[in-house]
Amino acid sequence: MRIDKFLHAMRIGTRTQVRRLIKDGQITTNGEPVISGKQQINPGSDVVCLDDVQVRYQEYFYYVMNKPLGVITATTDSSAKTVMDLFNKTDFRDDLFPVGRLDKDTEGILVITNDGALSHALMSPAHHVTKLYEAEVTGEITAEQLATFNAGITLKDGTLLKPAEAELVAFHEIENFTTIRIAIHEGKYHQVKRMVGTLGERVVELKRIKFGSLALPIGLLAGNYRALTDDELQALKADAEQPVAE
Ligand code: URA
Image (cartoon, rainbow, N blue to C red; front, side, top):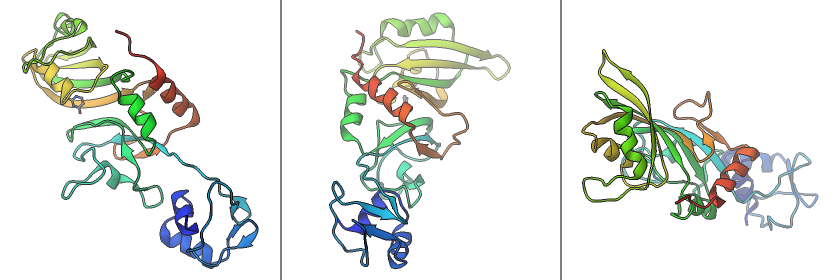
């Protein structure tokens, strides 16, 4: 692998910043100064240092994002802004992708990684992690209506859903809308919106507030992201190993 690519992939800096670090003699491999970004290295065995501090090889990267409204959950799109467009130049890698998807008009917690095995384990039907949504719904929804989701409902197109847990947060009488929370254990297309549709009402705002054991971090503004902490990553890996309760 080229040393400049390695340094950029390890988020040492943008491509321009990496070029500058090499030019300024701040990078060594196995104790020898690097003079060209084209120099090949073996990331697993060569010791690369920036100002005598080792740049350790990291294969996988994990981020939590507060997805804002109006961007699509995809890696690329010819016209629409994607969640990957929210990454800065240092953190962006073209192998990163979102785990699962949120609609364009849904906001909230989204995990982004380049770890395909973890993503697969989190989303596979055998382990599918629980996802908690908060929704603003037209009209008054009662706790009794929400209880119908407990047994698993059939959507209008005949799709049979697994049992879900829903709770009433508040009915806003003057504005005539209800705040509810729904935990689901699968990821059917527009699932929450279609579940609410079976009650004859409509979701007007939808936010995912929990993904497995990972809650939307307090203070992470819509459109921002940060790396997962080690504890968060371990918790997510444990979620991925948890068999789905039938
Ligand atoms: N359910 C929906 O309807 N939309 C989402 O984005 C996620 C769950």
